Length: 224
Image (cartoon, rainbow, N blue to C red; front, side, top):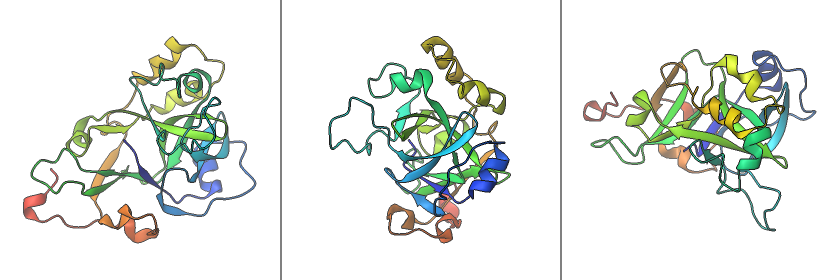
């Protein structure tokens, strides 16, 4: 899953990197520790919008916060009542400086050790997502490559050549939408790297650049 991420780029930086033609009037404060239900940037078609992280479907009852719908599994997003409508016609990209994952697959290594995952070139990640009613969720898939040694899930990253069609609301049938998922990139193809960081990220009150600082695990705790 993806339960926290960093979002430190400005509106102008995101708009330039993704060639966007529309941006929101207000700018979000930089965050090195974005938590569920926070305001986040979401790319819809060719514009940038601000939404809440945690999808709230139209039929949700009062009091539904979206805290448990921050992620949608790629294997079932087309059939889950909370997600299937949005998946067909309200798909988005969620930009991020990088995201955090807590080790569950490291075996001899410390359980719940946080790692930060980012692009090798330090450009923005583009996580595939869905949105509805001003809220959004990140689509996740089975982890591949070196990320599978940290956690069994990872965000869905699509090839850049698929972005325009993924964002196209006119492509609104389930078969076409599900086809995109099969194009998901492995970490190596997406140009990702991961390194251990302090467990200070566990606490939402902590929010500063030090959360992205690599820490040593020691000789017996080397990731690879």
